[in-house]
Length: 90
Image 1 (spheres, rainbow, N blue to C red):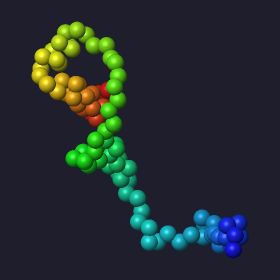
Image 2 (image 1 turned 135 degrees about the horizontal axis):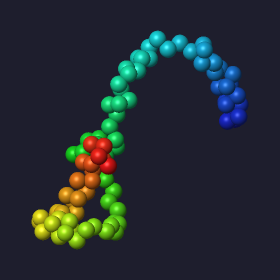
Image 3 (image 1 turned 90 degrees about the horizontal axis):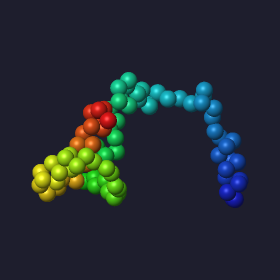
């Protein structure tokens, strides 16, 4: 049997949506979609987002404060931005 024959056979057996029986499929609960988390929040223990190098312009005093706050200041900037996104402030 060729692929075309098989496809034709499958298409002949397809039921219209009005004839499909759905009793074993659970109904979606109203808030389920609101519980879906963004990809970067899923299993943060194992997730390592792709890092991209970029250039941004910051006020000199802000940059000085961040750099003098110790090692890892760029990571902290990323965390501040992420928290702003998650809270809806950005």
